[in-house]
Structures are given as structure tokens and as C-alpha cells.
Image 1 (cartoon, rainbow, N blue to C red):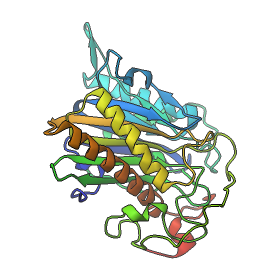
Image 2: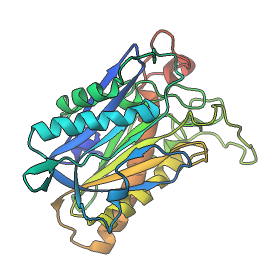
Image 3: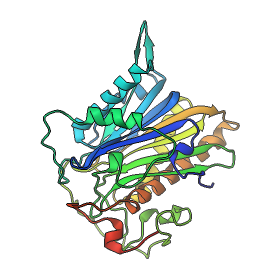
Length: 332
């Protein structure tokens, strides 16, 4: 496998990503969409998720494709970002046809960033407008780090962020990941700068430090956030022609990447969730082999994207946590 030309989820042809955030709010949202509806699925392993329209992504549901997926800060308030996206898509005459009406299908997931020091004393929920802005900004190239859904994110002791990575398989199939890292667990090993995801790094995409020294497996970590303050939400995507059950399996496999990059992950206090998206542009030539490799690539890309999210975070006045670079003084 090798990274795609952008090393972003938009290396999957046809996908677009847009961000919107508010510096005073210290929060934002990220939207992924495409020119045509795409197959989607979801797998949730965290104990405290916040979601919209995830039930219809089950393999046995009527709707087979979606128009966009939304990742947002703001806890339950952030789910309104999907309403802004849906209304904008409807104005573009996009959505599931129901007689003369089109209903855009926009599943969403949120993370908790309400206690990061931003101004949360709004009179009107700001996430609806942020959703509209993010969809309007959707493009193939986009920023990482302190942007979009990752703008106000934190980890156990470092500033979190928004990350992405991609891989091209020997078959020519492309796989990518997009993630907002707001985890209860740590993305770095012990008190040092090495990332748990280092074994999967491509080049120096998050510093090039290589694998970390051995960390005592007997250590029992304690939660450093209060109940309900964490969650890592992600999307993995491919241009392969996957059914909804196959897409769900890709999302399930991708959770391995989260576990490789965050210690611990999938806790009762996190809402860890992975969406899967498949554009269907490239038929599978060997279903067993291609599905096997797609799942592995999804996990690998997600681990890399998590490390990149934290590595690319930028400092801002009033941050409750230091950035990776502020703490370790390193640049990649």
C-alpha cells in the first residue's frame, strides 16, 4: 500500500470534505459528501455515542445510500449541523425521492467539546449555520489539525484535532480515513513524543520518530476527563463497490486502527464511532481478497489519521491543553 497523492480521504475519487468552525465558540463541524449518493454504514463501539439517523444505515433498512455524513462538536447541540446540511442539499434538489419531495439523508455523529473554554452562551444554536457553511466549503483539498469538527477537541493531555490519511491497494482500490480526535485515552506513549500509531506511519507524516520504547503493560490508566467529555468519531471510505453489509464490515475493521492509535479506546466514557462510505466506482475483482485488504487499509489509515490530527493541531490563546509541538518542541 502507498498513500494517495493528497494523503487525504478525498483521494477516493468523487468525495469532497468541507469544514466550518467558530474560534470564539471553540467548536465546529466537518462534512463529507459527493456528487452522487453513496453507500454508507456505521459501527459504534463507544459507550456514550451521540448520533442522528444511524439506525437507517443498518443493512436491512430501506435506504441504501446517503447524501452526506457529518462529524460535529457541540455534544447534542452539534447534531443540528446535519439539519443545516440537509436543508442546503434540499435546496440543490438532492435527496431520497418521496413523491415530489426529496429528503436528503444525512447521518451525523458528535463529540463533546462544551468545556474547552469557548463561548457557549448562545441564544440560537450555531451548529445549523456551521453545517451549511461546511457543505458549501466542500472540496478535494482541506486542512488538518485545528479545523472543523476537531477545532475544539482534546485528548487525555494534548490538544486534539481533525486528521485524515489514505492508501492505494495493489488492486488499485483507494481507501481513506477522516477523524475528529477528542479521546479519553492517549495518542502518545507514556510521557514521551512517540505515537502509539508509529508502526503504521508513512514517511514522516506525524514526525517520523519511529516506534516508541517499550511501555509497561501493567500500567492501569486513570480517566483524565469527566464523564461524557470524550469521543473519537471517524469516517472510512473507499471507491470500491461495496454492499451495505460489506461497508459495515469495513467500519468494524477500522476500529482496530482506533485501538492501535489511542490507549485506551472504546471505553464506556467515549462515544467512539466509525462511519463507512463506498462510492462504488471500482468493482471488486476478488471479493474475499479485496474485502480483506480494504478492512486492513481502513484500520491502518484510521490509525495514521488519528496521529496526524494531534500532530497537526495549532495553538490558540486560552487552550486548555498544549499542542503536540508545544509540549515536545518537534516539527515534522
